[in-house]
Image (cartoon, rainbow, N blue to C red; front, side, top):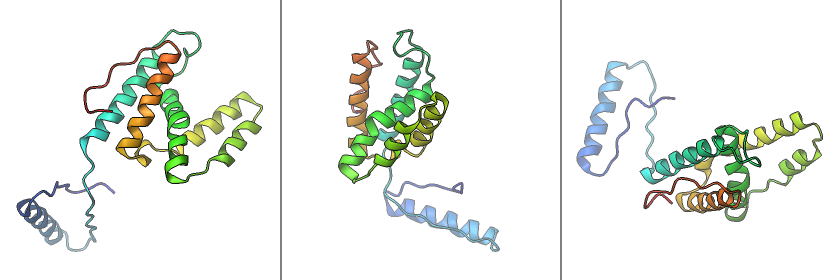
Length: 160
């Protein structure tokens, strides 16, 4: 569902404006039901982190280093999640991906193996990690790239 309006509520004035907007919308279209969601604001740091991860994936996509050449940025984004998100979610959140690893290991056909890899990666979301966990995964990903001979764009201060 696409939001009609989003407000950062940092004061009573902002809350009043949000209330007035909701009241106006409900009066204008009284036959519809609406949902009011209140949640803690997600800071822009995680947005900058995600943008940097995608930049790195593009840089890896464009590399000509033999061992890592030939993959698109989506493949690298999946690699980030599989190699660096999974261990953090297992350690911190108690997630268990043993069955997914087992299904992947059982595949002998390269096409099926890649399909299982993609399905596993698609089930993961960087947003499942908090900012600190994402920072840890990004540092590990940057080191992973360096170990393969690829330097990535340095993060801006306060991005990691």
